[in-house]
Image (cartoon, rainbow, N blue to C red; front, top):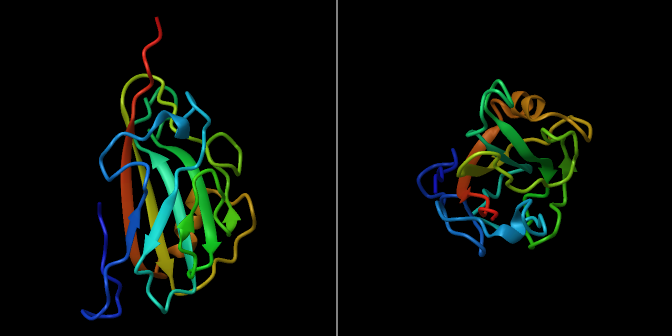
Length: 167
């Protein structure tokens, strides 16, 4: 898990992102993917800086074949302006924030569904020093531009998924 100390100084604790359904680098259970119930996995936010005004959560897959998506990235979840006092998201729940659009054109969570082989799915949590002035349905790119220069801490969690072979 990549976790970064906030800019507040050495006395600050490192912000972390965990799930109780998979550990960093482990397989994401199929109930959280297109082969199962497509449930949002539980996520826990730890040591969010007290000076954070809002959080951003993004889940994406950078292993997408270029013939399907030229940039090789599929956005599964984009949520911004999450209350920084939030402890996380319960399994199957929604973050209390503003939902951006994913690569499927939806504002909902879209679980792993790799078309070809095992893929890596990265959840990134950003703590910001401001709220983002964006409307629901904003793209991940718009969110990343808006949060530039406002990140005070960041954490990530990577899970892997491969579709079950069918007979």
